[in-house]
Length: 70
Image (cartoon, rainbow, N blue to C red; front, side, top):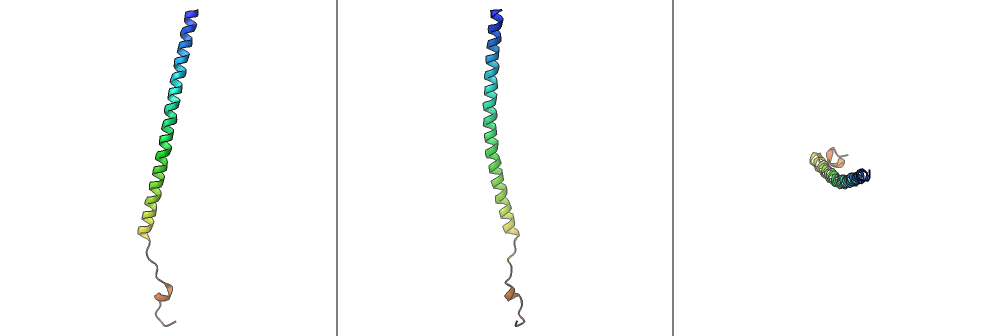
C-alpha cells in the first residue's frame, strides 16, 4: 500500500501545482482585462467628449440677438 499512497501523494502534489499555475494565469489575465477595461473606458470618454464638442453650436449673446433698440 505504500506504493499506492506515494503515487496518490505525487498525484495530489501535481494537481496542486496545476491549480496554482492556473490561479496565477487567471490572476494575470484578470489584471490584463482590468487594464484593457480602463483603456476602453478612457477611449470611450474621449470619443464622447469629441462628439459632444463637434455637436455643440455656438450660442449667440442675447444682447446681440435683438436689434430693436431695447
